[in-house]
Amino acid sequence: MRTWMLEAPGIENLALKETDTPEPGPGQVRLRMTAACVNFRDTVIAATGNGGELPLVPLSDGAGVIDAVGEGVTRVAVGDRVTPLFFPTWEGGRFTGEHGAAALGGGQDGVLREQMVISAEGVVKIPDYMSDVEAATLPCAGLTAWHTLVNAAGIKPGDIVTLQGTGGVSIYALQFAKMAGAEVIITSSSDEKLARARQMGADHTINYKDNPDWSKNVLEITGGAGADIVVEVGGADTIAQSLEAVAVSGFVGVIGILSGLESNLSVMSILGKGVRVQGIYVGSRQMQEDMVRAMAATQMQPVISDSVSFENAPDAYRLMQAQGHFGKIVIDYAA
Image (tube, rainbow, N blue to C red; front, side, top):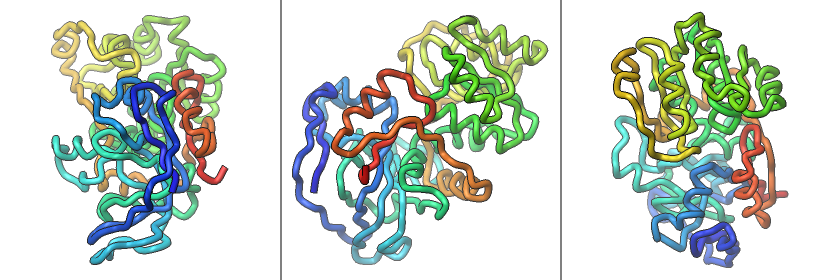
């Protein structure tokens, strides 16, 4: 079978190799992969070389069909369409370091190969109405947005939610927030992307290039109260704005590092409002199963920005680096 390998730091060091077809052991299944999806995390891993843990099969997000099962597998069967979990060992309950160490495309080899073996407990079935390419976007971006809004923030009808940018997590969060009956404020540096967000139901839009202190716009929109929930994807350069934009006793879900890792913050910006700030690192199988049921009930369609073929997989990384996407960048193995 064909397998993409990151052999040294740098996208130019992604190499397409011929490797042995794996066989599932007891409790495992083998997937014939049909699609994959690139996240910002994957570009960081490619650039840094995964902390020296190379070679590595990259990417955490994908979809496939079970074509073989090992002894004792009853939860799923040959022919089932599934997505592997970002954290294959996190079935539910509290997140642990052991779960983190097992992340696909980082702690262990990922999905950018024609076939892979994984625990039968580490997959979630794809709803019938959804294509494999759409489903490949679920395990990281979709689940991160769901975990942030539903499990962590406890979103409810009438809440005001502020989202940053129009990448994969933010567009999923827009869809989930509207599903929950919330009012949505979204930012972008592109008026064209903001217009698309409004077509998807965004109630208010802010061009952060024209309004670098966009928290003031959020406060103006909310009559000075601030947003009940802020989905923070920017990192170092935006966290202070998020804390200004959030309401008293509000929630800031920290999920992204687009602008860096280090930031000087005033502790009073958190204490003074009684703000709850929580880091969100994807989610568990139970969360993903809940998310998929909610999506199926409403026939919610994941938003695909760009698609490339398996043979041209490095181009998906370059599209992510260019930051021109609206929604998710996918790799279609059948293209």
